[in-house]
Length: 322
Image (cartoon, rainbow, N blue to C red):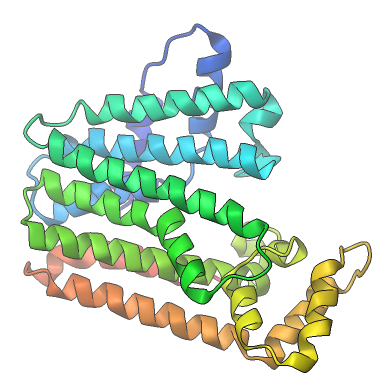
């Protein structure tokens, strides 16, 4: 697995971008240099290898297109979220400005298509259909996430659909593109896509739990950050779904309070979650989606040893320090 991530990182590092205009290409180089685990493009290579592509480098352009698209979405997400940091470094709009962030993000999207065009011409039509479908769904998910910020209450179905679109479909699409390049049949393409989608939902549910209950030394983000800004995670949506009427004023007071108003906001919200066993609900649903994912993987009719890398990667994603 690490050799695939290194292959992607080395290829991205060696990518040539023009020097001018500097305010377009320097931010692109800067953002790509921030690294990350390159999970999504690695999935493309893992799937291609799993279905016996032959030369793994044949899947590299498609893998890079996934990574460029993902980074495009992050640059624009940071603008929309007014985020000051990404991977511990200044975001593009903070280091430069909003206009530069928008244009350099656009440049990354164009670069994604440029890389996709370097794939074997026999598969470009199918790759494009998959890439475009997933890309549009990611945009839909981001819009829903922003819409829900201004909605008092959403249903659990709405929340799961939002995280499916915003987070999970890109994992599924990355895997399907690798399968396409390795000439997997349509049934196996569907199964590997659904595996990625369900693993993605499980991963996001776990992320919601770790935000509230994680170890700050290993989670890599501020613990309780979602709670402090009243972000609609699984935990809050579930609480709103099952809370008793007598506890509604307590919840509403916490949602109305800032950390300045109530320095114990995080502790008080966690106490409320505890009284309704919210973490247990989240863990159970995460396990259910994980099981669905591995059922899809089991249904793919290839030797089990060829699935080992994907199983290992998925397990690492879902077993993080709490």
